[in-house]
Length: 287
Image (cartoon, helix red, strand yellow):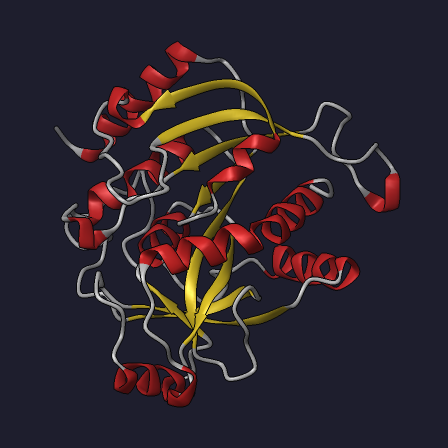
């Protein structure tokens, strides 16, 4: 079945389960799944029940779409605009990675469906290794640009103009207004954050010291194994994008590199996650 028809079928199924209308989509990265605890939940749907959705296989990825309202401070407080009921969101509690064996179309299919659900913007989160020597574990990077070193592109193949243009321009991929707002909130809340460049390699192995050196020389501030495919499809779909990366381990200079396990990454992410949750809640209160 053509991709467009798959998207329509998946969207129709979701609409049959809930009539809740989200304004913002949020993709949660490894160890960052507890944001759903902040929601007033209207509905949640397991990925396995949604037509054409893949299944999360990575530890800490719950594998469900969660619909609900994210509570915020009262209307009019310090410029906030969200109603007292909270900002309506749909949260991807778990993402798909190319290294899991999924195709790029499968990895990014949920973003197509979120667009079809008429969200206005998407916030993409992840954890990463820091290759900027000024970054520490637990810092946040508000992504202003990326370096795509993945061997596949989700936009490869015959283009369906109903989904987006053949050659999407990438100049304004990461929404400047959302980035500025995120940085202002981080400063006001005392959260260590920089604007920076995210790079993606295929994984699942972590990068070698030589690769970390290369990424720094290329201009990267942090690196991971996800997110850029979703960003490409969001850009193709004309969705404003905000990406926030939580630095889970320091990977530059070489003297700072330590052996890192998934358990280490999840532990650091869970320790620093309250900062990410606070930043997202405060940001949505202004939208």
